[in-house]
Length: 589
Image (cartoon, rainbow, N blue to C red; front, top):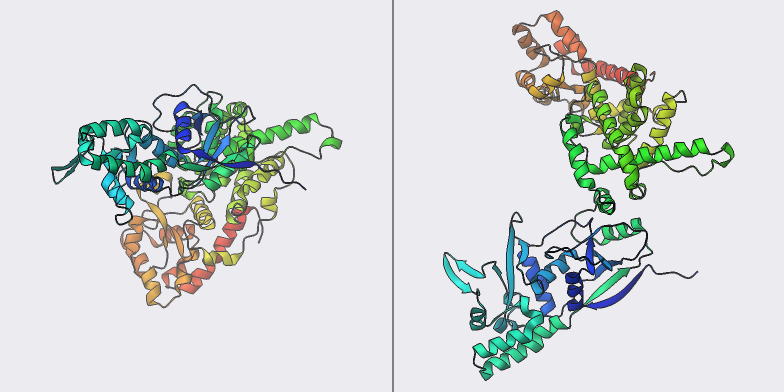
């Protein structure tokens, strides 16, 4: 079988490539984000070219009237947007080409980052002629000079180098790299300045042959992807070759794609994000999460339309439902516009639903993808989300997925399946597989130590939802209490007491020995034995009967705790937690 290559490899003269950038024939796909090199890195790049050393291949995409719809944009340093439709898009090499264009052809200072990487500097680049000709006894890097925009170098307030005029450049024997492709004119002016002294002319001859020619004749290896490649293939190549070490995300890609329809996805998302930021549960929702939910809904209704329009005999090739990278890349601007508002409402419905079950902020959510899936489900259900039975079903699905780590493996596949199966279940069908297959092993409670873990978060939320009361105030853990008093999960038998009692740390640090308490209450408990801190709480005015009620709200046996019986308390609470968990999952033990 004959293999057909998807790319070509050739060489391109540096000057031709930079002129193509200047003329707009070579541009960037708009998903390429700005990323500025620091001055030292640009100096090393110029140093390598001055020695004719390789600087790596450039990867480009051959643009034609293909199905690709990436909006192009000019490289940084092009002051006006060229009207030319580019013939090449740069996939890898943006920073190298931007730095070289600005330093060698733009006639403007180069935008760089300072040493700390916090601020932008604008710098001019030079080569010290005499140091360059002393290579290899003097490292070529020492010959590369960079100055700030005023072209003056000061040390301790004193001017040590001033190249602010051509005559000062000539006097210092320092060549401005911005004149590299205008060298003959610069040489003429330099020669006149030195009155054509033979020693200076000989030095320039050697400099031209050993340095200038390396720039003039420099060729870059080019990997050129052919225009027949699909959009997702081009994106994968970009991710694989991207040298900025910043991962490409789908939101950037779709932003570039929708820009071809004169629609700013970024601006649209920023407006929606402001609304989401007002709800603590939605604060961590990103543009990519929102796109996943829109994609789930779009593909779900595409499938529904197909089912309605097709006979049973012809349903073997149902359109897929999903939100993988490939499926999001195929999302159209029209589909986004149609579903975005409804999906935003779906997210807000989820926030109300989960808030009612004592999840107050984004950190309480076990899985981001579960939030995305639930938002898609609520978008399909619309007003039906308000029905008590439906809300109970949604929470049963939620607890089964969170407590059994259903979204830890292939979350996008799980999301697609659960969207279909949960809607069918609510419409009278069988339970989704997430519920049918849900089994919680009692031993898992003994391993729950990481408060960032999905099961840990889910069990903590279930306890809050059970109506736990604060040990000291007796107040319910409401959202006001949660934020004002900084409620967190703390030890029931204090850590220091457990160490003194020689209880294994893996045992006393697991969730069975932890419960939601305010930070103020936890300070009162301190490192005392439970019998001591319970006595202290009673001395503060809480009756024994009321304190027993408070303890039971945490699924703690009061008698065991008063007797400092760690093992008895541990066993009974483990069983009580299991009963709570299975009730939430709609299961019987």
